[in-house]
Image 1 (tube, rainbow, N blue to C red):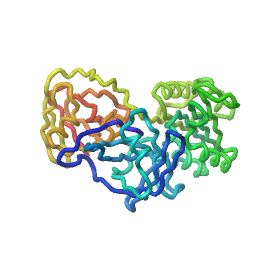
Image 2 (image 1 turned 30 degrees about the vertical axis):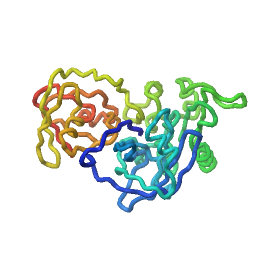
Image 3 (image 1 turned 180 degrees about the horizontal axis):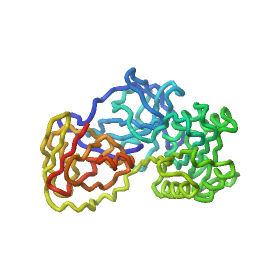
Length: 358
């Protein structure tokens, strides 16, 4: 999970309790990807595939980013995140060039629904990732392979070239250790002349050819997808054509699909009621402004993390009224059916909106 958001610090940091952790090691995975290993607080637990939110103070601003944990509980000794340096990326550049062992990080504890949970009905796992999308996927893979009930794991991993393959050594070690249980296919869009593996981007034919020939059993399989939205859409459609139902296809998005311009129908200022810690608060929401941002501007200590609609930190249950969301990727189908909304990308459509948080 990578949530892109920055906000000037006011009198206090909004959101949940902030913890400080010590960096144990910095690992250069590739020229662009850096792994930050940190000490695990005694009261911190996490599920494979979850993410943490990291808080920095850069140039006088409090800046938050959400990063997937690339480690697995019970497998790796310490938790870690792996961050790919983005062009002109404020935080990714800071992490890549500035952080060192011994430094301390302010974090919010793990969250997220892209998780592996032991299930005896799952015998096969299909993981499809591109680029830095491997970070939560490798956490899931480690945990699934530790579970002896899982008979077969496929990983299809797309990258630009050989040097951009994150966790190449770890993946080779997993393959060697797990032998016939793990099948890994790398495909490169711009390989060197010496590359003898699969060439090109991840595509429908590659997915079908890779997993069908080794005996896919749809009713016993589960799939995890992480990468660009168009890749995940293609992969989901392909897997559904092969017999997987939507509840067995789990996806994680790293970048918000918001265009930067709000295409929302609320055409006037509205008043929203927020129930937070059993107390009701009235929030004035100006035309075109999200509910969360309006609440924070008015001093309300509402929880948030990515502020891009990709996580669920700002999740609340809609009690009355109607809202429109720019993005709902952070919510599961069940959560949407139950009436949960994301305040960071939510805009009131009616004058009677009431949302309960927590």
